[in-house]
Image 1 (tube, rainbow over the protein chains, first blue to last red):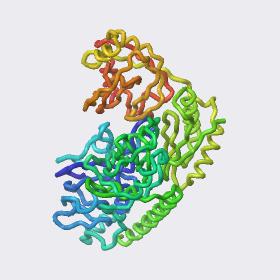
Image 2 (tube, rainbow over the protein chains, first blue to last red):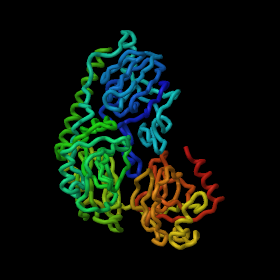
Image 3 (cartoon, rainbow over the protein chains, first blue to last red):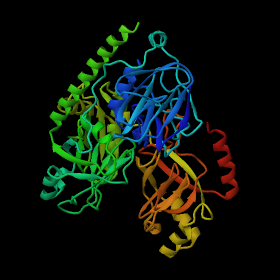
Length: 329
Length: 233
């Protein structure tokens, strides 16, 4: 059990999303930065799709009711355990009664906390993700607040033995860590031309890949609203609504692009000028208002090649983490 | 059979273009594709989203690349057949029109030079079908509303529209399954739920369904609403 002391601006339970129900209009939700959540889960010996906490812009703290194994990944937010600084991208032993706290974000804007055993909330449509607008999933369909008692799932055999061994040795954190993505407040993000790319005028097509955009204040889990030069269609036209995807860059009539993120609607009628490569979505997920973003054009073949390499790296890291785990037993 | 074209939607999805414009032909093609995907449900497919003229298929790029997905889908669609089409269902949606549930009913009447009851008669008399589900969970994009009761959206959207409210926007009618902001003209409310998160198929309506709106009074509304809520988890 985790007892929340401070919820912060927005802390929700998320897994890798509610896939398979989009045809009924149900949004996917899930972690904005899926790489960080997957790594946090693997580091504590969970299935990578297990439910964890997504902490937006810090300000969260919680007390652990029992000994546990935790990992914090994603944005750097001066996390500490009873005052002792916590390093990211590696496991952390948490003794019963300890308080894990987050300060203000230093890099990125979303931190992920995985707990061995997972956050134990009911599955809604096969997922633990919080869908705030429909008030379903996660912890009572809402963001966490003070005094919430968040249940933690039971540990597997290896997790239980590891936690016991760590307590015995007075373990805190190991020296090793898994690699973090190249988070930046000024990243280059790879983009494939979108379905309606050719409907945009030449100037817009050139500028998309040559001039940076700024992330606006109106950005949230649904989408990053960008500000920059206006993008316009060669000819004004109404499009027929069709499906969108995580990372679709759509352009409403005001010409300022919106990158669709985890809480995107299932379909939309605005033209899509581009589609962010899956490998770079974690970089986009960590952007906050005021950050700059530059797009670089790649082909779908390159996007899929990068995807393949990223997944292979994650497989290797999974194996490496399992090796490290054995050292503790 | 169907000549569809395929285009990438990023590195994890492929868009099947079934028709160039909205219409009965597009609707039947999208339903055929949906039925074929449902029947075969290939292991590499992670989900799909049918819309007016397209179906997006999401896939695992570790299992196959775009070219292979295109080939797999072309062959899958060659096996699509009308025999697999599920029967067209007719779903009745009872609506309590006007009053506190439909604050814009007087506007829609005035705008079209009709009485409120005439608006209701046109609305219940339409020949409706569901083109697609989207925008919100279980939200149906419905075609077939009589043009006599068309009404423009509000200039300033309302911040909160209660769930199950029935509205009109331009020549379209729809029902809000969950509380949302929106600019539609609100003419009534249904006591039945359209979004059913506790069920395997979380949407009351599906693309292809026919819809009949039936006028009910306040008393019947209360009774049905109570019933629907009694079954809520």
